[in-house]
Amino acid sequence: MDFYGIDMKGVFRGEKVPTLPIWTSTDEGREIYCLDTNKRYYGNSIKWVEIPNSDNIISKTDYDANTILSADIDNTPTALPISEGEILGRVVGGNIDGLSAGQVRTIINVEDGADVTDAENISSSINSVFEKITPVEDDYVAIIDSEDDNTLKKVPMSSIGGFGIDYEIFISSVEPNSGDGEDGDIWLQYTE
Image (cartoon, rainbow, N blue to C red; front, side, top):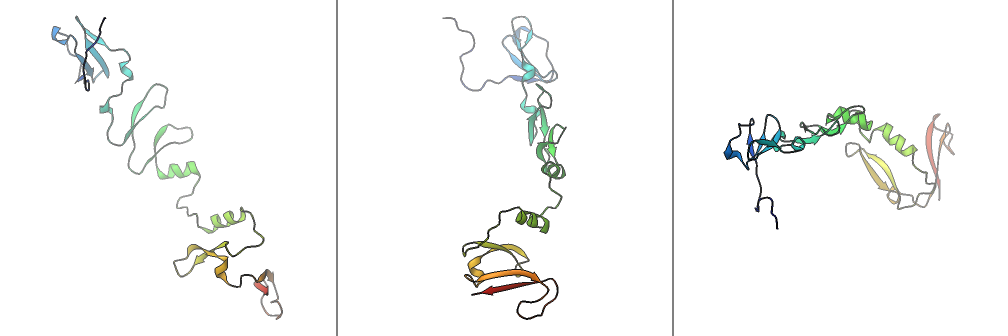
């Protein structure tokens, strides 16, 4: 049986050198990684030989803390540091990068300081849902709690009181059954 190679256990570590040294007979069987060429070499019986495809190897020394591997062009991976407060992403027409909060908001189409509980968002949400004609006591309605910094909360219909009573809501210039009221007042009339 022919055997080629070294029988070993554990991690194999090549030596890292700043530049390719002049070959000597003691370099036979030695493997090195040359920092200035970013390539690996092994010493054969007469010279240093480049290990094929060593330009595809990315060294751990290329990476600082919070660095990722990215490629903006095929087969050209590079280390990309992501700064604190950035999110990894890609703007339209751009390359992979650490994006600022403003760039992310542009991508997801959200205004700066957006609050999903602002009047515009609430009204568009309410207007876009299906209408329920007859609420039941287990249904909920949204309120703004004036006793808790105007926090948005939900209240079950059964807590509102008068459940089981038919309500009629309308806008009128005249209060029902009294003749009082001003133009545009909203009145709630119920019958038991």
